[in-house]
Image 1 (cartoon, helix red, strand yellow):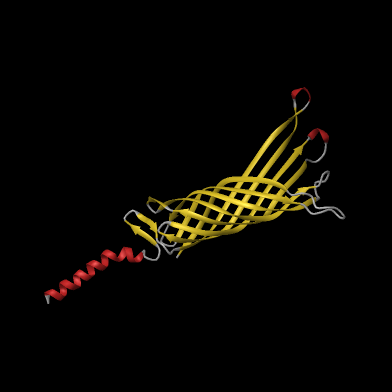
Image 2 (cartoon, rainbow, N blue to C red):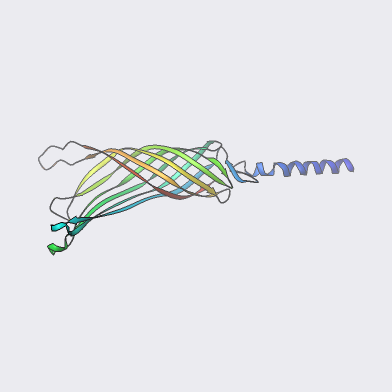
Length: 240
């Protein structure tokens, strides 16, 4: 009777010893320091948001050095995307991101002495943006990971610019080109499935603006442009 009991106790001890590894075999590895690694084969789905807002107010000089009105320039940039990542080895993920972008730059000029309403001109870009990405999850302890990453992709959309002499009429053109992305963020795993993301993102758009040909005329040459936005990105994810 002693030998069978000893064998049962031995099997139980082995099972308890390997239980943490078995529980994390399909997902997030855990130790006494929290979640410490993401295993090969894990899929992570998430939602990310990048918002940049900036306002600059410049007084307009008047006669005798006095101020005569002001100009307000407001820049807004937003990128929202659905992301999917697959861990090809422990802590190394490749993924795809698909979403939309909005970028608006408005200039409002207020001249109180003229007795008119402030004039405002707004340029805006909207469209689709997608990336192929790679991220490495560096464990920091207590279920936190540093997640540096790079992305390369494509964007396409519409640009609206005001018609000269009019605040309401807009000219539309097409913008498209290469998009690049640099991430320096962190992830906290609240559990083996749910995680929260935050960090610095730099998104660059390197493309061209294409104009429609006027009636009976030839199409103007495209105009190249570069736009770089840096801001704080927040998101959440689900791993399985």
